[in-house]
Amino acid sequence: MKLALYLIPILVVVVFLLIRAEILKERKHIYILKPISTMMVIAVALLSFLEPANTPAYTAGILVGLLLSLGGDVALMFPDNHKAFTVGLGLFLMAHIAYTVVFLMVGRFSGADVLSAVLLLIAGVGFYTLIKPNLGTMRIPVIVYIVVISVMVNRAVAVLAGDAFSRTQGLMVVMGAVLFYVSDIMLAASRFWRLWRYNRISLAFYYSGQILFALTASFFM
Image (cartoon, rainbow, N blue to C red; front, side, top):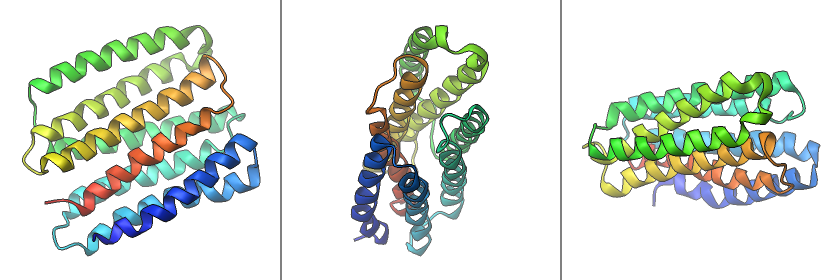
C-alpha cells in the first residue's frame, strides 16, 4: 500500500475534531487542529518523494498550492478580522493559480473543456448574483476569486484528456477540484448570503479535495 495512505485515517479523525471545534467555537482547539490538518496533507504529498514513480515537478507544484493553502487556513482562523479574511482570500487565490499551472502541465485541451467551462460560467454567474447584494468592498476580489477557481476546475477536467494520468488518477484530480470548489461556495454563501451554524462542514469537502490532490503525487504513473 502507498505510504501516504497510512496518514488518511489519522487525518479523518483530526478533521472531524476540527469541524466539531469550529461548530462549538472552541477557538483554542481550532488554532491547533487546523494547521495540523493542513500540515498532514502536506506530509502526504511529501511522502510521494519516496515512491519510485514520483514526478518531482508535479509534486513541487502541488506542494506550492498546499503551502499557500496553509497560509490561507491560518489567516481564515480569524473570520471576524476583515484584513485577515482578505489575506486568506489572496493566499487561496494564489494556491488555485499554482494548481492551475500544475494541471496545465499534465492536462490536454479537449471538447470536455468547453462543457465544463459553460457549466462553471453558469454556476459562477448564478452564485455571484446570489451574494452580490452583500459583497460591498469585496465585490472585485470575489469576482476574481470565482474566475480563478473556475479556471482551476476547468484545467482539472483537462487532466482526464492528458496522457500523464490513468483514468482513475484523472478522476481523483477532478473530484479534488470539485470538492474544493464546493467548500469555497459553502464558505462564501455563509459569509455573504445566509449564515448557517453548521457551515464549517465545508471543511470536510475542503480537506477531501486537498488530500486527493496530495495523493495524486504518490499515484503518478
